[in-house]
Image (cartoon, rainbow, N blue to C red; front, side):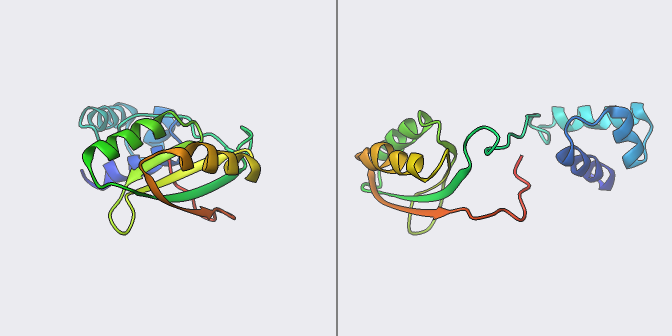
Length: 147
């Protein structure tokens, strides 16, 4: 990967719907050379896919929290059971197995505090694998480059 590939990736990260013609112009390539590079990046797995970035507030989920979860047992079976349960929860937009004092970091989106409280107590809090929950409420996101 060279500097031109990195410019292509930066441009596509900003706007995944940019036309090949516009992209080629932005990075200083002919359209055919630009398309070849994008295709090569896709085939190599550098570009894993394209998707729409949704606005949680416009979808009725204006409350966002990051939640750390500690498990009661440190076994593969406990992790797999927790991950299966979390994969069924639409409020959980991201789930990461992490290192440190707890096992998981979740990004949770809900309509409001009451909806989050319901998820916290009636869903997450009822899982037998969960020993500890800590919530960090997002008050603002001055930088957000998550795709």
